[in-house]
Image (cartoon, rainbow, N blue to C red; front, side):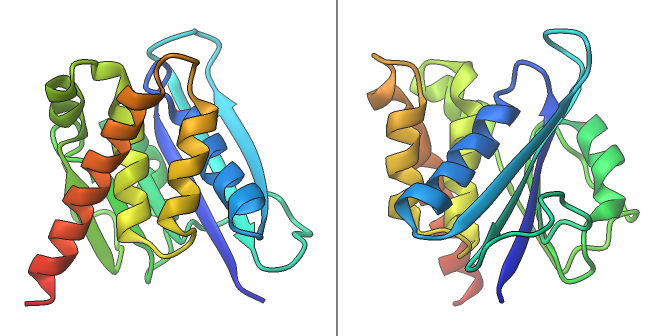
Length: 185
């Protein structure tokens, strides 16, 4: 049985919970897998720590909580500090390049960064940085098919913002694929 534990971390207002919903929906609806989502956030609406934990499996899931993430996606320094020590030693750390500054305290086998905030600003709306990160996640992992994640983005975002969000997804995905191509040369 193949089980992958994923944690998205950041602060309220960055779209952390939506990121988890998109990946979980992509797995369960568009990629014929099983998925669970749990979420945690502070009492404040924006600015407080929050996380979304997704478990994806080829078989029914008996325990829906992330214990040690295989993949950790962080969009704030606080999330990195808080959740970084939880990642598996052979895990993957994906982070927002301008907002997170890794240190020696996290032992992930593989790390990669994307300037998601800058990409989102170039697209025209900083608020889509989470979708840039979701695209980056799809490129850097093989947990869920990229097309399944893209389909999930399209149906999960507010009506009227689909094209903007798909551009954000494509930007993060292309950046990730470019990083992978550079490391295989």
